[in-house]
Image 1 (cartoon, chains in turn red, brown):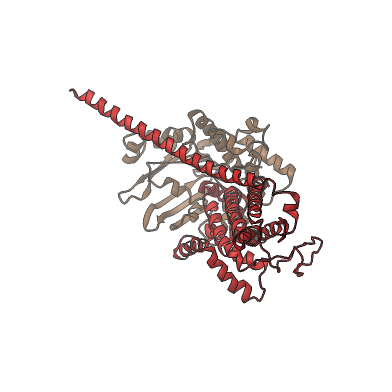
Image 2 (cartoon, chains in turn purple, yellow):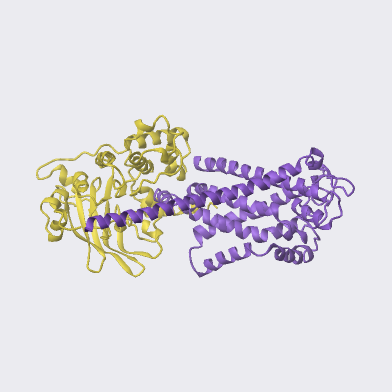
Length: 309
Length: 312
């Protein structure tokens, strides 16, 4: 056999294997992606179907009841309230910490340790965080079970997560853009404010969504901090934030929807536990969806406003 | 969070740069070149002594500049002068320190951790390495165009207005006028004037983006423009347009351009400096002369070899 034809044969063999591998990779990745979508679709579909006949205006806005299906109004409110409270603490501090870590602190052993600590703390089991919260924000402060205590417990792992994700978003902004701004005679802060932050907003919004998801879904960290009870019959006209009966007060026990799902299903006292679980889960899914879409929308507006001025 | 701005303002008051006479190049009349016996327009441009024998002060000068990155010497002992309103081209093989050296003139090397510059760099005779020099003010007077077009992801208008706005300009009519003037001077106005506010700078073609970056620099009203291989990422037609633009800008600004392209250096520059990498891998200045002389009759054998394409 002559040399050229041998070479051609080898070439054909290699490309054949490459093509098979390429097709296999395509098929496997599509299948995995499809499987994940299917799983997500199944979960959503299950709760949409299960919640039919449960979720009604009276279920969404009504008070819980031991004798009938009742509603989850105060608990849904508590979830939203807790979310806002926790995000008010974690988002500004997290972004500022991220700016410091990305733009000012530099890379050395101290900052490496801080980054490692951020990642470690944000993955501490939440029941442990809850127990720490019980000591720190319930007993030491003599607050008892409060929404604020719950929010602070959530902050323990949300703040490091937010700081780490903000830092990553800021670091991902190309060096070219920073150089261009500095070379035009902008100061460091002007460069951060007008070029780096606007470009990092999509990444920061991702951080906010991931952090918010943990607030919505968290139960263990809130059991011993925000408590397993909540005032009902909220009067939203009561703006006295120091009145434990006011829905606006951070100093009141505040069971969230997630905690309530856990509670009704583990205590087994209510004969409607299953329906309440399904309905509340559907409400939680809906809330997360609305929050995520809202956050993306606001992020886009913010980027536009920050870059325009 | 305003400390950055406040600091700038305070330093600016005592800033030696600010203290010097600051003729805004944008408002200067076209330069009148006195032509007399023994003196040509070229002489005036290249900073030769004038009739009275008094040497014109160079616009920009480097005195024994060396640059190290950590322990590595990148540029060794370079001294040169650039007369006002002329174009100096820095040519030489990769690794000869041209770009690194260019970044001394607006102190962009400050941003690289571990970079250290020794020697002195002067603008209108003022030492730029002095500790009381405000880099913010310096970079407004010495603009820079980068190798890769890097417009901000904002509208064309906001890109051009970026520098003036950071300096506090907010008057709408003045900004409009400045944006139009800068874009016109960068030969981009007619192409973009209808979508100034709607179109993102990133939506332009590569060549247009680079002219936008030049307009953005012109809007800060600099006196010196540094260009780091400004056409290396552009297609031939865009390159020609940028070169044409450089020749026009030379009437008003002092320009230093780094280029890999010897034809480009020959086409646009008044004088050319040839850099080479030494045996210690540090860049150094081999020869600096009028562009024509350097390309046709170089004094140094290395230059001769390089410009005739024998190495590099």
